[in-house]
Length: 451
Ligand code: GLY
Ligand code: MN
Ligand code: MN
Image (cartoon, rainbow, N blue to C red):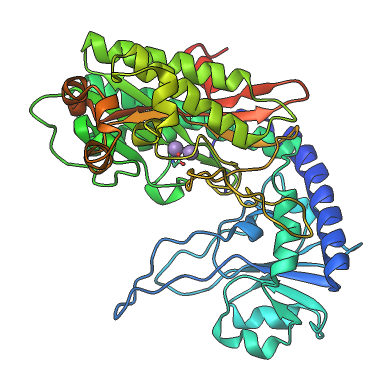
């Protein structure tokens, strides 16, 4: 269920109504193109821990989250075009756990809600014949006897996912809320870093400020002190603060009604030289954000990021050659080995980043850029991250030192900067008719000077 919000429920409710109508239209078209008459979407089941009676934290499947912010296991949405969607709400009764409360809130009026005590009994409240219904979700034991037409048909999933890239006003409102919560967490994390907390202590400050449990976040926070910032998806969360503090890289986002924010900031503990490099990265990130508008080819945005990275490396005296020479020799990929950004929405790396059309065909990544997650041309309503970075990653530096790139890099400068790990600056951008709205910077502004 959504957490605290600054939006009035009545506004969210009318936004949700319009959004759900669009989802119904999109789903009806997708079903018709793929030869099905109805859709059955599962929220997912609890996953038991081997040889125990505990389960892993539950996470609802994204195709279910498209329909409802309800994050409970073994619920279903059944949709037949021109009919009100059915929500099968699973409300188990056992004395070990507190049963989930009946759904309430701004979105419930749009569903025909049917309550069941377990997954098996959901079948009885669904139409008797599911022979033209496509099912989306993991297979579960009794699904085979339900008589659905198909399980996870790839063509249908593709049609549905393609449409998810353009966000509606409701989704943008949720993404703004997720950004606001994320910014609140980041400001608390920055204070915890200044107070000398460990990585774990910084995470606790982030969680408390967001008002979310770790399992309610869109991804595990990446909180790296010093050279650990060179590990792109660093996961350790050291419990003890290091003896010397040089830098913090925090990549952490929050979630609202299933929608994610994905925010990274890097701070220097005081070193002026590293602070100056962080400032250059903010300026470069700003320049990249300025280029985000409808019609921008994301592959070009990514390649421009490499050109700008070469300039920053050159200005920061990390190169012994010109920016152009470094770019041509592939030196920028040593320092920036990930994609410049990705689609953002119900999933932190949202679906459909490579799709040429709903019917088929993928847009390939530029050669030599294997980790880019988005190759589409931007349209109004897309929400993307912009996340340039410069890192001092031992394995990549060693590989560069062993080949012809070695003479292009200023190794004594690299040695000086290594203890800071790296820098990433990441904002979330909503593409507008003429440019983009920076959800992250707006959220920080609002948190710093609430009206
Ligand atoms: N937080 C993961 C990413 O930035 O893509
Ligand atoms: Mn990201
Ligand atoms: Mn991130």
